[in-house]
Every structure is written in structure tokens, then in C-alpha cells.
Image (cartoon, rainbow, N blue to C red; front, side):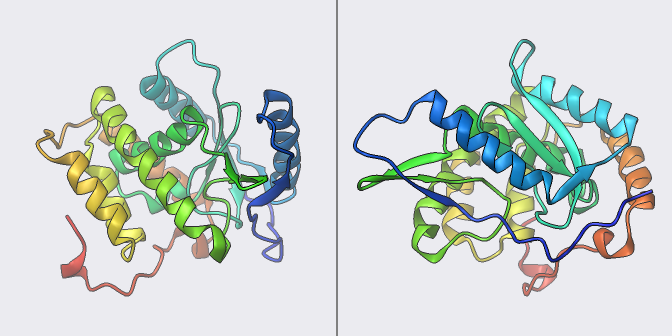
Length: 240
């Protein structure tokens, strides 16, 4: 049974970290990660579903290979809707994302996207004399950082579709998910179209298993978390 999550918890924004003109090092990253994780802990709670947890860990191994130091965790939260990544290989997956993703490939697509933010170290970017810290997918992005943030999202998409195809999932699933959930990000859609050009699609990878887990998770969620996110696009405008 789900615990109650406060919907008054503040959404996570980026953190502008003043740093003198010096290289950003691992120690600063560890401190920032600890601070962000402490904030996330106040907005999440553990989600107890052994089959879903086993599926997510196995999916992570499929997408990154064995031996990589990653942690995949399913959480209950009202603070964010998509898999969120933190420095050091932490990927947090909201329980309701099992429902918002329509199939196994869409679910894997956004996990792969989160992995790419970690692999490409997108969390810290220099802006003049400061470093800007981007926690991905955990809240709205401030106006002044949106262009830079959107560029990093597009950078993660290209390798993510390659990672999907290599693991046996449909690489076009990322385009479907973005078209449905981020319909006005035309640059991202165009970038994905270019990346996917000529790639084979529609491989089947664990479809039945995912749907079975998806239905089990759906039954455990409150109704408000099982409804699809609204979109202003007509169904005919959504890319298949």
C-alpha cells in the first residue's frame, strides 16, 4: 500500500553553485549529490514491489552492461514524473512511470536517457564564473537555463536510441514518448528524427513481462497517478 506523499513539497530546481575559475572536481560532485539526494529523500519514499525492482535492475544491466557502478531505485513521489538521474550513477524511477510509459521500449527509452545524462556528466555546466548544477527530470527548469538544459536533453537522446537498439528495444520508442509527453519541443523531435534515420525498429524485448508488472503496479497506485498526463495535441498529431 502506498504511503501518503505531500504534494506541497517544493519541486527541485537547478542549483547555481559559485565556484572560482577552477576545475570542477569529484569532491564537489559528491557534496552536491549528497545535498540533492537529501532533498529528494524528503520528497520520495521507498516503493516495495520485488518483481518491479528485479525488472528495473535487470533492465539497467541490459542497457549499460555488467560491471557498471549504477544504482536503480523505484520510488513513490509526486515531485517528478520521469526517471531522474544523479551524479555517480543513481537513477530514480517514479513508480507511476510504469503506467505513463505505454510499453517496455518506452520505459527502457527513458531509463536509457537518464543513463546518458550520467555517462556524459551533464549535471554541471560552466556559466561565466559559476557552475550550474542540473538535476534532470526532478522539476521545472528556470527560464534563464532552459536553452542550455534543452541542449543537454538533446545530447542525451542520440546515444540513448543507440543504447536501446543495442539492448534489443525499439529505438523509435523514445520518439513516441517525447512526441506524446513533450509535444512542443520541436527541436528535440527534429534531432530524434535525424538520429533515427535509417535505424531498424520494432524489435520486441520483454513486452509481456513488462505489461504484467505494469498492471500490478497500476493496481497499487492511487487513481490520480495512473491517469496519462494531459496534452493539448490532437491524437492525429502525435507521432506513432
